[in-house]
Length: 85
Image 1 (tube, rainbow, N blue to C red):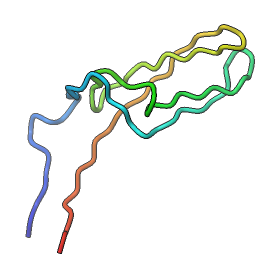
Image 2: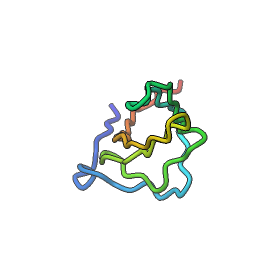
Image 3: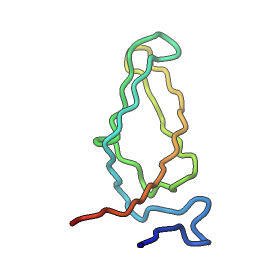
């Protein structure tokens, strides 16, 4: 039976060597200052050379009240065997 496992050096973070890494995720929240709805689309606003398994800082900006804040995200990687018959 086939087996898929991580290599011993793959624990912890590792870099995705892609300058403009677009992913189909959207961050939605309210501005902590004025309550205006904020959306950050990662399929438009790319991650640059992200680290898998390590925190990445996302800079957020509210155009209504000129407030800036940061959010931390963690990009994870999952791999599975596909049984194509």
